[in-house]
Length: 180
Image (cartoon, rainbow, N blue to C red):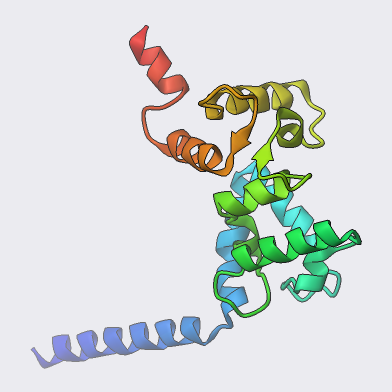
């Protein structure tokens, strides 16, 4: 009985030591594996990680608002970048880590695509700089799905609603196959 008590005590101590060393890590290092795993599994996350690396000019694993703004010089573009930075900076510490950068909320993605700042997305804005035919086709399908009122523009609400619908189980290709 005493032997079991010592084994349990040793296991508890080992667990506390292991969790303590994990907690002692700085936050960006602790988040790095999850962000790197996401980037390895998802082409969009991989592209975001590459973009993050390019923007991180001092290589410290954190983006400041100035690094995030990059080479933007026009007042409207700078203001938009600052606004998006605030949306992404979830912990409010004035910097972005890779996880914050890749976990863009719908509003931030919308603002980044709205190149003319008019509060709606056109198909051309949504396509961005895409050149691959399959990516353009997918974007066109998504645009048409999100444009619920048929005005050839997507409002922020339509965009957010479209993101929610795309994530719901049973939507998209799987549902069409079941109906056949």
